[in-house]
Image 1 (spheres, rainbow, N blue to C red):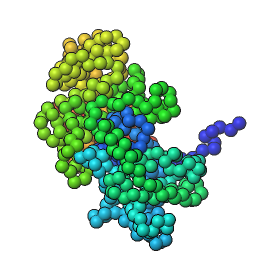
Image 2 (image 1 turned 60 degrees about the horizontal axis):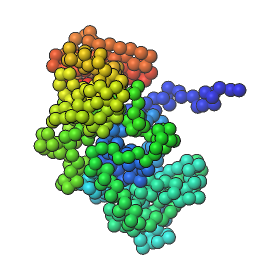
Image 3 (image 1 turned 180 degrees about the horizontal axis):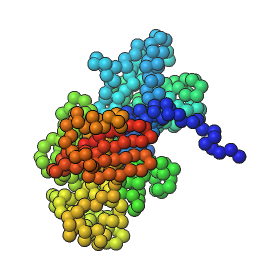
Length: 441
């Protein structure tokens, strides 16, 4: 019996380089600052809440990012084909951008593929257009059951677009990626369905704690492969708070303003109750040193006391009490993101924190310096690192303060006196690629 790897396509250096390019490009995309119409039909309110609050980071491979781009490339082809059969199609606005629809102060938003007039089945009716690609297995189910049954998120997306644009019909066009067969379906606007979706979106945006789970078992297949699985169900061996980075959306002091003035989804207003002001987009993405986690994100303990600067928790298992906040002896958000749940409240760990005012850190240099939390000052070939540091006027000594190396990377950390300009040089060996990162968690 042959080995599985003998039947797989070999990944040459060229192929891997292309995948690496898509990985870097995809990972550098900013996260959404709103609840998307494209996912409002998802089966779990809790997942939608985690997504809206920036608690979910999907870790896609370069190959998958490329696959997503393949779907995007199908859209102009559908537009061209509709025009060639006599339809009037608007796929961009007056500024050449995708049409954006939004509601609830911009905190609910989506980008339409376009709208069309002259669809052969109803030539006098304007239709929202939605273009998708599908693997053969799911395409067959789509033909058998229709879009509402097979792809409820796509159906909900179209209902949201129709309701917010006042159009009464949508044209769903899908391509079988294996055979190039096409499927079309005209979808009718259902006001009751739309109202339920908008009520759902408002509830998710307004609440400051995760809604109930849609499914009752962590090993349910709909839960098992969810990007929020560890955060939702808790994992004592993983981080105490399994979120990708600190941001204002996960802080007790911030509030999404549903009546805020906005021009597009990027202008959705969040306010800081502690600083009594509006939070900028950049600030929201990074949070501040006064960050105080929403208590519901701490899955292994309950809040028992609090003030403006700290929250005291009691662990479910050992009843140990500890305080989360910013300052000596307190557990900061960053520490909770880096530490396993069993460490928090541990008498040994607490003794060290009280005696030395230290912080808990079990992450590697590479994981502490990445696109989610740091600024990339430069990237390129490893042999150009020293030249790049000179051009960037980085006055760090030749010898790094910290160094670590494994089979994949080598990382050199140069610390500054004030801690504000720490720099890490990372060499990604397999890619023959290097980057200089500034700042750390």
